[in-house]
Amino acid sequence: MHPTLPVQHDGSRGRARLAALDGLRLCAALMVVAYHYVAFGSGAWARPPAEAFPTAHVPASYGWLGVQLFFLISGFVICMSCWGRGPGEFAVSRVTRLFPAYWFSVLAVALVVCLWPVADETLRSRDVAVNLTMLQSPLGVDAVDGVYWTLWVELRFYLLFSLVVAGKGLTYARAVGFCVVWGFAAAVAAAVDEPLLDQVLLPDDCWYFIAGIAFYLMHRHRPNLVLWLLIAACFLVAQHALVEAQGRAEAHMGHRVPHWPTAVLLAVFFAAMAAVALGWTHRLNQRWLTVAGALTYPLYLIHERVGWLVIRRTAGAVRPAVLLPALLAGMLLTAWLVHRLVERPLARMLRRGLLRAAAEIRSGPPGAPPPVPPADPPGSPQDRHKITPEPFQAGGWNYGRDRR
Image (tube, rainbow, N blue to C red; front, side, top):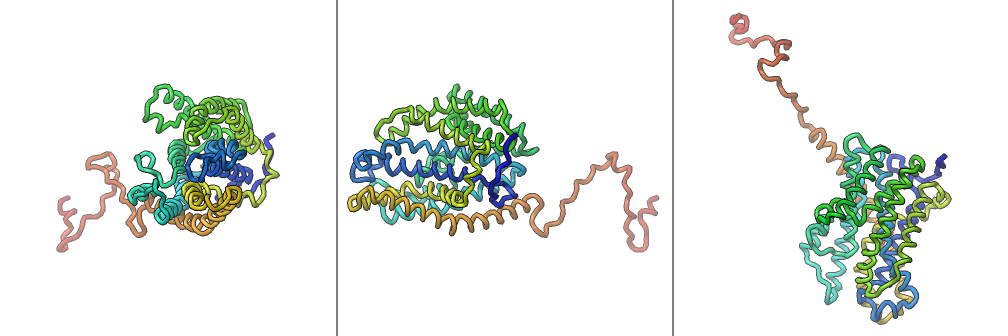
């Protein structure tokens, strides 16, 4: 029997909140932060990262894999949040989750860069404006912060998954069918090397989302051979695709690292998600993990460009061993403030406005007359069964009777 999990609730229609997933989110965010601060060849430190962090820079060189862990978690969470919801509710939940912290981060990072500019960093106001839509990647506009590229990947996943939610809603069979069809279609897209198909089907990244969906189906129902085969196929394809991804990461870092830790970390990610799906992590449902999980999205959005600017301006005066933990603590505090003072209240207001707008779109604005049913054409079969109202009276004469 699949175990019943003692889980927390997030207050959203009674959906259970798994604190272990929040812990994994925090791990993913810290991996990305370590990659950017310790291993990335940004030139922010006064010397190469290998000299500033002779020991830490090697494990930090694999921090880019935190993005793949985020995608795995996203597949699980999106499937969980969609269950029992229609397309409208799903869209509202995604907009209110993504945009409040993102809007603040875009404006805050742009302001910091404008106030304390660096010689090789410029931001144009029109680019910042486009960034607020989250469509800068497909439109070829420079991102305010480099990490925002992953949000375009997430948006495309949401649009694809909304096809499953539409119509009859999300069911077990529809979710499994979606995973199978998406996987085969992505493989075809990789084979034909068509840019449009690549943009729609995400042949490099879809495997993490598909595996996350399968893990959630295990969690909601029970494991079976079809789900295990789906997950195994996703792992096998993903570990092959990561060879090219590691090459891109090494180009940014400016140094090469062995590939075998990449495959090991991917296996650890899949094993951790399996533990959550099978109910082995219910003892980790601690309040602090939920709080930590809430910080990961703002931390991810604000840490890179602002962090590099702080490092550039202080690295010569403060030792790296002191500056790095102080910078991380400052970023975590900033993320908490953004979550409490910006993300939560703005998300509530945005949700209320979107739900009200959706209701008006469905039924018309308040005070609008009800829609009039279309009249049957003259001479239609329905006309013979209609009761004609009494002809109008005029000047004391009944024109209807006069004609009869």
